[in-house]
Length: 291
Image 1: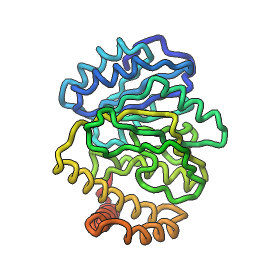
Image 2: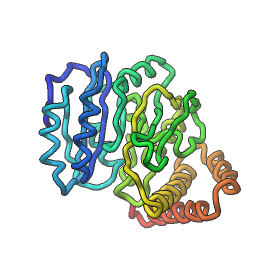
Image 3: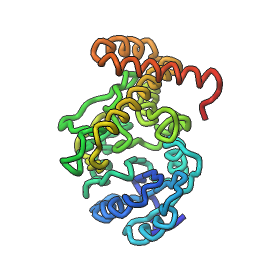
């Protein structure tokens, strides 16, 4: 563990960020952290998910200059869901927020999340994700300017709450058992974020898309081939998400109907990749090849 400052006795919020082999992006991320102007007590928990580049050496240096308490966690086994769980175990806040290492939280991000949770009926949220560079491809963003409710026991559309900007009350994640270690980038399926949100909703918790907490996604300018590959990954992950919901959640009938109704909306190629992802997930479950 590396402490960048004297830790507050009880931080209201822990911001958990996982990173892997992105040493070149860390300086810009920590610059955004240094720009935070939070009244609420908070901490940064950053999880090194088995990096083989300069990340392990770079993190302690940046942490000392962050101006906030920083805890560095090592989780060598790949998988974003597993890495997030490692961060949760070391976090101390009652509110647990998540973003990515290629995202820059707005200067009021921490306070915006804390303000949202002043509504005692809110159990989890997703926030706005805007492009840092307008020249970047508009992918993995969420630009809505109005709140969107996620009632308990509802079917949660993929993309409504994304791991680049989401937060939970600690009690919610404890109740649902945290993230699924077998999901997230670094595993065959990328849907660890919406899976956690879906399980929270199915467990009776209420969520909301809240536009006030903002992060800026700096994923870089992508060529058409890499964008297409990313969409294929998301299509397969979406299929795995539907399959897991149908297997595990009490609202499986609603999920199945929602998926069936989406078939006429999605492009045929996307639908086929969803089916491939669902079958792959089912096969891995049956053969116990999910971590």
